[in-house]
Image 1 (cartoon, rainbow, N blue to C red):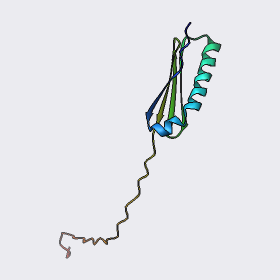
Image 2 (tube, one colour; image 1 turned 180 degrees about the horizontal axis):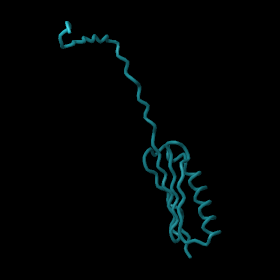
Image 3 (tube, helix red, strand yellow; image 1 turned 180 degrees about the vertical axis):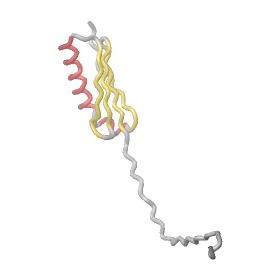
Length: 97
């Protein structure tokens, strides 16, 4: 049987995703060992390594793929308003009743 190298695909932020290639390969090794122990031909392993990094390892009949989804966090700053707002309350009706 010809052994193929594991494909690594990075979706999203490439620089952030490259930092997690090593942990993704470790997860692929865990998947291989689980499949070997259970005598399976195909399997998958999905997990969040960080709140913004998701790793999916797939092994289907010897073809192995690690997909790393890395999302750069966007920090939005609240815009403070320095202008004062005047509210005018108008009540309709007869005040004598």
